[in-house]
Image 1 (cartoon, rainbow, N blue to C red):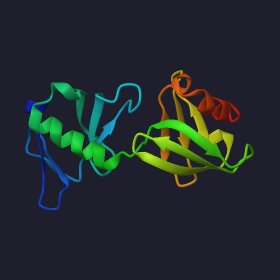
Image 2 (image 1 turned 120 degrees about the horizontal axis):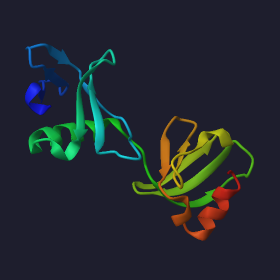
Image 3 (image 1 turned 30 degrees about the horizontal axis):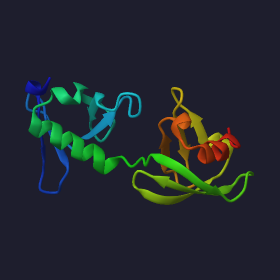
Image 4 (image 1 turned 180 degrees about the horizontal axis):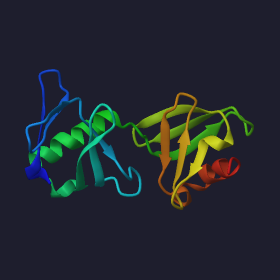
Length: 155
């Protein structure tokens, strides 16, 4: 519960967790349990060693200041552009370079192999490029026909 701990930024911009008994942990990181399916539910505050210090059931239940702090930390750590259109692919064999339009602008990604396209809860897909960046397709059936046709060649 939020009354059991305090969370604030130190002078270096790192999160500092102070527990109910006065135990202090610097470098705390919020981690989503279900980043795609339920991004605002089930968030753990973990110390630098990966040990859970607190559990946040729902982000919206937090006081405004604490929620803003956790959301800003999550935003700075997570980068997962959402693909809106597949513009072109260099080849239907892998590796191939894809030109895509995302919610954050145009991008090019290199798909090393078909195994880098993971099926999530239908109809979502997670594509990992050669640099380890994850691209999300929230609903592959909502893509335009040309994008679906290119994508289907890899599924």
